[in-house]
Length: 502
Image (cartoon, rainbow, N blue to C red):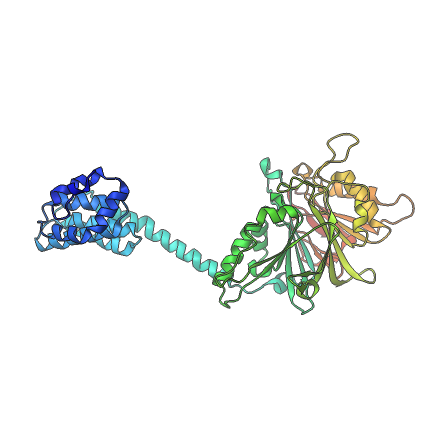
């Protein structure tokens, strides 16, 4: 359309605006807005068509400031001429609302309603707008403000590790494996493990391991928060081992934005190749000041990880890592790039000379010799996964019962070993204690009496091991007892309870 048919000084030509495209309309209105306002001011307030024509176009085209100016002028002119101010007040309220200026919008709607009451007008748009803001918008905004206040308070809760768990503790935050939530009849909490150690500076450090489904929910129920996580170890990229990672990193970002100390917290993450690919977009995160929030270290079988970003892990966290092979396909590499780890701690071995080592198989099938990768550990976490599905064959992606037995026979080598059996399929409900006893019995040597050397304990969300003496916390009393004096109560198949049997 020829824009010469539009004249900012002649309101009777403005109807031609509807024949322009969006860009043409908005450019013409902005270029001629001063002249448009002058033309409107020359009109009477009862000449509503030009006012509303321009006002409605501006609102429809998101020109909210221009629409506000138009209806502000109409309101003042109508008020001066003692006309019906309810409509311009309401329309100005809309322009304020669409700019997020809710208090001004509410004030306009109230002014509109005040005039409508005087002329006994009921069921008006302004009354509905007031009701919406009073009953929905304002209370919801208050809830958001309250929740934000709670979040900031939570983020500024000091580190609670020493008070809730103390150093040198291993907690399982895991119940069933990844498929269980699809058909669960009960509680299908996933999770992982949580380890506390003291570094060489005497500080208690918290290490999350394979934080999967519901990890942070269970973790928070323990009285712990983002301030208590200093490092994350991830054996592979499957959701049941990584689902809570993004939530942890989101809380880390919020912590660095809102903590009252104005100090940046940095998480050290150790992960497989699949983990690197899965989270690579998050690993470069920085805080408000451009400081890095995450250090990442790739875990490759055969590697000895002793530092991160040039800083000693023993000095920083109280451990080093020996990376072990795992025969389990990752989604992001489509290869068997999963890993197991041995965590070399600075805890004196309570049974022998040397330092305590904790082995974590991660998800893996059994291959001959895999157990010898863990021959030096005193605590071994095995992911059983399921039982054998085919006669005479090991599972392809998990240890299964026979894989656990064979691996333990290779790893035990006549020394004390506490094996913690984890990541059960939910078909094990009510049978976890029995399966553990079967594995323990069959992994013992045939000759001699070595029954006290190996103990297999099924894990649940209640299991906590005190690493300084390898005692296990009794569920009801919270008292720690030697692991060979603990029995498993599976009266409730959903919840394992650990009881002293002296």
